[in-house]
Length: 306
Image (cartoon, rainbow, N blue to C red; front, side, top):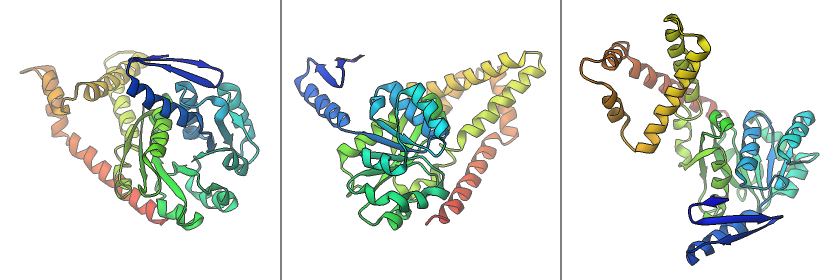
């Protein structure tokens, strides 16, 4: 592989690095050696669990044979094994025994029984949970105060490797090298940001739930063009591409969204006419109000697990 000034060649399980910069070479060797020592366990292969597994394999972050997986749906895991080459084990206990970092990708209602059954095997290991609304304190209440927990919140676009994952952890328990490993695992399905746990419920509306609002907007945009006579399949493609391209402009130009909007709104033009109509219909207020309601609900749900 080639990445900037780094050239990688992989022979079986050993990786060799050639780099002009000696210091950078040393850093990369440390990172690669650290990653090479990691076995990742994934408990739960639903949509998000499967997306994370496929992302790790596709990106080459972790070799597939070093990813240990269990799900009560055996057929699903065997299909995933056929597709991605991961290791399917027979129980949660085996996954925890064979792995250094365990990603718990199950619904909140089964967290307690899973951890009560085999949580004693997590000593010195890192548990990463993607269960929405469940705070770190809940895991410590089950596993003890010495448990090393990372709370992660990926979103649905992780399924196409364009997600955003928010992670929080207690800094006195997990060192920088270890959290970098967790970040790299989730970078395989998109971007990663670290956030204080007290704000995790606050961003549910912006990350986890927001794709639903975007899908509604794409559907509405497509419906309007269908009304004008454009075939629906083409309408969906055009609307989705417009949203994708617009988001990419925000991320890559570094410009404020309002500045990008102003660049399109020529004097007495069609776009400013549409913007005027959206403002009259309280477009921005409707989105803000919806997100506030979403956050309120997230806090109510989170209280159940505290």
